[in-house]
Amino acid sequence: MKTAGSNAITDGDGRDGFLFVGNQLIVDFVNTLPVIDGQPTELLPDANSLARWLVAAGLCGPSLAGAWRGVRSKGYGKDMDALHAFREFARSEMLRLEHGLTVSAEFVASVNEHLMHHPSVSQLSMQGGGVLRESHFAPKRPRDAFGPLAADIAQLLTDRNPQRLRKCSNCALHFVDTSKKGTRRWCSMALCGNRSKVAAYARRVRN
Image 1 (tube, rainbow, N blue to C red):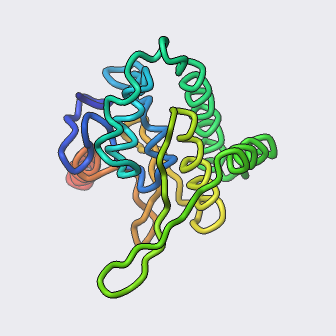
Image 2 (tube, rainbow, N blue to C red; image 1 turned 135 degrees about the vertical axis):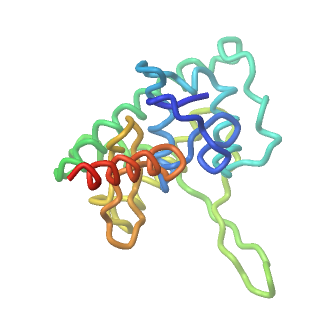
């Protein structure tokens, strides 16, 4: 699979055919509709692909993959339609943030509704002689994905700096800039970073 600009996805950028360059779960979810060869390409066309994405994102064990085959027969189509609509709502709000605006009251209300109906559950585990608190996510159907997605948006808006959201200058992917200076303008080194550095060098040479 290739991204805009026909850059091949490397192992560091993708898992199981999905892009993970956003540095934030909700950003990676929004990036499941990337622009490939100039056209938006749906990477989550059905519930089974969503299950694969949840596994690739590290939210579920591999046993979930293949569990949601037969979308229409199981009635998962409406779940996927709702998730797609929420993804595009999140994309529009991310664009607002990337332009220095705040999120809309309507989006906050939508996130709160999902947090209420799909609350996050935590469990304790013993690791390395200590106790670790971990999120417990065992989805029964696709709509349960609203749980971790809404929780991640809440974290982005409250615990992280939403002003670090960026849209790659070379492609249509979004990411959270985790660089120390906060001046990165490309999604990943492998996809667009090298191209940006080569272009910058060429401009310096010409000048």
